[in-house]
Image (cartoon, rainbow, N blue to C red; front, side, top):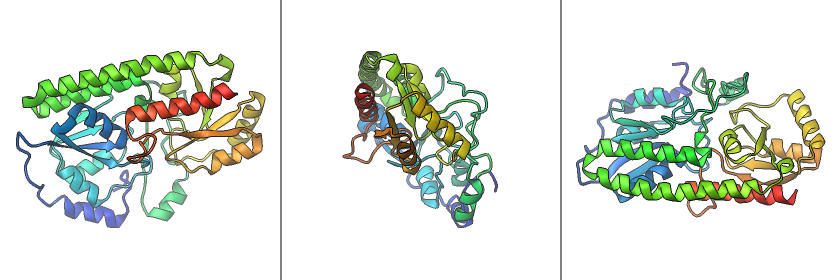
Length: 326
């Protein structure tokens, strides 16, 4: 059972759970039961589906999909869904084995299908295996290939134009699963896309007003490549693509030198990451902690990033405040 990072107890539970029958079969006229792989996709699906769907997330608010360990509870969750919405691009390395263990028989919507994929610079296709010995010792499991992103950056939702592609894919998939409500899904998607289109235009205008010399950002891990590409910023990650990978002493030394030489005034935490690395960098360089960014997960309900639009607006406001002060 390598390549599937479940501890032995959870794996046994999944095997038992997968033998259980799914709960009541969905019938037309009832809300369509949907599971999203993580909280950002959960919100996008809610925006398209409205009251026609019930949507839960395997990885919830403030959860880190990079280190997620499926449990029998998630297997049951998946068994009871008619539709699964996933990101694709090797983001959810644990998902194929979870689907198999759960016996998932429904329809899968791969939200990123059709986007212009951002290729990673050579040597940055992280396998999330850094720190593997520590993590395996603590949790008694093997990451294997389950954490490998491959050559492409999977965080495509960070460009709002890509989120529009996600929404179209979700609307099409929901309409396929529930054709009686296809027109409603299309209408709700169209309304939401108009909102996203306005948001994208606003971001481009606001970031264009920041002098180019001030547009360098230090963040916890490399989750903002699409955002940087779309809105004219440069992100320097302390970690690589995975929140598990730890920078070497040499990497940290080079980053400290870069922050000092380029006079980078602010560095940014993420909601899913341990803050200690950036706090160390702040102490060694004098750069201020510019605030908290939301990368791979929304905040809980009532927080500043409880929806996708709120997340993007919160990130933009946090970045602009620090960059314009610099």
